[in-house]
Image (tube, rainbow, N blue to C red; front, side, top):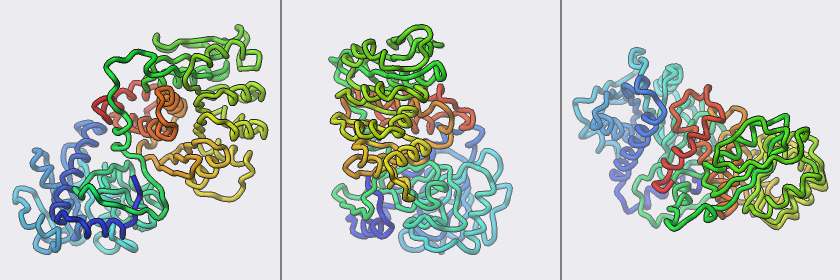
Length: 509
């Protein structure tokens, strides 16, 4: 879905054949559903006992009033603090204020909210400032933003974190949201400047615009959302068998890193590949994976890393596969000739981790990579991207989006630059920002899980760009819906969360 400017969003609203009051009602109702879904899936009951809705005087405040009403109808404890009395709302928001129920506590604040309102078990709903706000927040609004941030409570912002300029991502102070439910289309400011840090988890909800609306995007960037994932996770044919869903081959591991290959291979199974074979140097087999995994130790008992001598054993496995993954845990100093053999395979290939560093360090391998005719998917984290760009002789300072686009163009590959709001780029210059995932994924091994998902989707004959973007979203979504303390999550946890993420995104999983 396209990322749009504030002026573009305003144009869509003004040109809509749907009354603005109805758009606000739909937006608030859908935002409330998303807030409740987030709270119920990620917060233990003791952390979601009551909701404090903080509303401004504009249309964002009107959205907040809709949310408050819906929360009350759900039988939840809700209280509203607003910067203006109900009688002061005007325009579209006036219709929501006119029928605001008397059984919801409503307090006008001139300075700050009583500290007792921010007791434990509270979820804050931020509806202070909307996407039209420009310049730094001032007066009581600025004080409320600081107070909410200091509360250390979960905060769900409506459309944008209050105080953020939705065109350029500037502003001070800005709400530090846990969740931002943005309306209709993602706004530019959520993905630049302070946006990525302050918006938290970004979720998109429809507001009831007519289906034939057309949007323009100056930057041409898109975001990948739940709706995009759902479209790709279609129903599997009833008359299917294991070969219907492809054979993924993971060439991974070493004596130094025996865990990474098993994380990747099990993720490939969980991602739906019909068969998964894990080839690993024999000395690197220090554990066993799921019984469904086909394990193929390579070499002898002293064999701790791959070499060209292994190719006769690997060749039959490569021949039987539909897509390959190379790199997780393979370590450094693998022979250039061996990696060249991998690049010569005329099948879809994911290169991850040590595989990226190995290719980046050899001009010959970079040439072979760019010459490949079959799709190649590269999954660098920032350090690996720096090595890759250095190998490509790209030395100028680039944004994350520019780094991904440059690497994709020069390597003739699909590139996913990992991190918060991972950036996917195609060789044609397309760019997509991922909207799932967060700090729970900042732990060793999660990249191996992501690479395994990617090769699984490739094995199922998904288009390479779609396979890359879907894998990134499912990977992040698995962490997002886990009721696990983010600081405690480990990569092994993700494996059991993948089926839940897939089921949450589509009825067909």
